[in-house]
Image 1 (cartoon, one colour):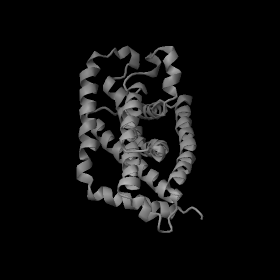
Image 2 (image 1 turned 90 degrees about the horizontal axis):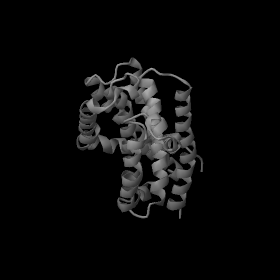
Image 3 (image 1 turned 30 degrees about the horizontal axis):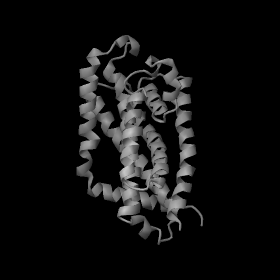
Length: 256
């Protein structure tokens, strides 16, 4: 059986339609939560930060791209962990869909594309919030929205790998508390990676969110260097590994 992007689009379309029916319930996570974080950390905690480690940049403008990358991670991951698991096990939606001509690869690709789309929606919402408070200044910051798709697709593929082997929905909570949440704080979103102890820095760069944060920050601040290309390469490398692995693990789980 071949692979059709049209069929993957149909799965994406199905999830999109559900989202638009329930969009009001998503406003808190899309707008209110990042607003509180940007204001509380950017303006509150930021007044206590030594500005010398930020190369003269205000703390609010420093963290804004990192927060945008972090919420792209959270929204894409939420869709491809909780959402995918519920559709696969609790609601048995996948069972009905796979009775049609749609293949596992098409279904899961549609799931990942929708996870990446949720990241784009999140990036646009948080970027608009940051802009309203003067935390982004460069017109290049608009590029963070399409970059959100790359970051979201990377985390969607990574999340699918985990969801494919998760024995129960309760295990997903551990994925958040033991992996995603610590990574959000250790990825350079709130302080430069260079300010961390030397032995820790390679570990931090091994985290998938770190290159995403650095990529978005360099674009938002118009600092286009070889490090920008390196960060982009790491995001693409994570995706190149997790995408086929996630599809393979899902075929093992869904094809009996």
